Length: 414
Image (tube, rainbow, N blue to C red; front, side, top):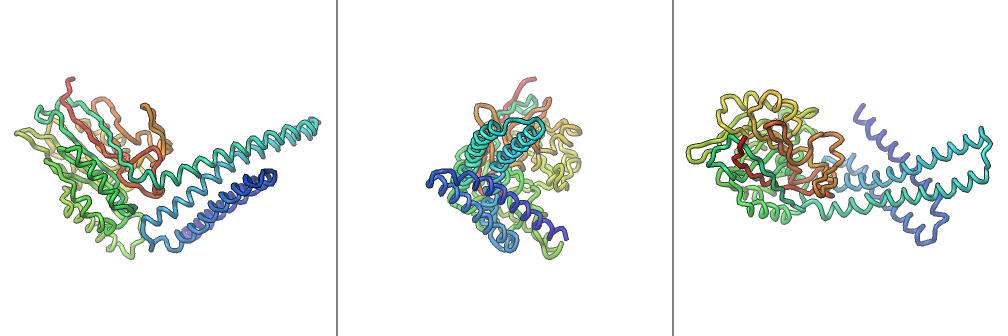
């Protein structure tokens, strides 16, 4: 019942939004010049048409079309919804203003002429402002779909650790996260990202989860790409919430379990050491640092990771943790595992949309996560959140580009 009710409610909301935005624009474009009127009509109808085509495709055939196509259809719906929603917000403000004027006129005998003149000018201003504001996602989202997905960007954080063995001073750790192989549609571009990563000459490589969107076979066409990842101290990985297949309709639990086992084999075939609630050591010249990896543990998401088990008997002066979901850091790591020096996470994608400039950063995902991208510190513990190598849902990025993290570990002094 719930699965039937949801699309009905969603379609009803979208239709109401369409009607409201259309009525608001229609009352205005009849007063515009012909070319202006035709432009507004054309953009409105194109956005509506894309959404009307995409909705039934996703609801009826969503499970049988490629993931990358699903992302584009979702992007078209998102584009139409955001543009109409922004316009509708300005129309609501104008309608509330009109109601206020009507009430004022009725009960305070306000001059009808002055109210009408004031109403016309303010209505025109609000409508034009709404059209301009709605044009922002209408223009930027399509650009982000074709420019942003493969605009791989390097980030170079440095962390100083007093207990770091001297032989590891300057250790170069390269991290990627959230590959989401099923979303890719340009293999050549993905390969160029790997070229950029390898050019950094990492000592060790970490992958922090979400190799696929749902199904292990999404990696079939990209095995040759990601098997290129090599480093002197190895490539280590963990699972993310999408890797468990929780967001896919399986014919049986056995099929779902078999998919997860296949995905684990994929890590092995890539030459990656998948850490499943366990630890390893990075060794050099008789010294070592601990490397702990947990299965997904996230607040509000799949919680299967067992950090106490993974960290048990891990004895090293410095300990690094791979944990997909950054909420794990606040919820458990900083409370009960104060000997873990640096945690590497991903998961948020930085929402794939936002602003980063001159040290300032903001993204809509900040409304959901206090910590969502970059380096964070609490006392002597650090968390680094990678912005993701791939993309999911919206098939693009704006401002929050796909990331390759190049972290340097230095021997600091307390």
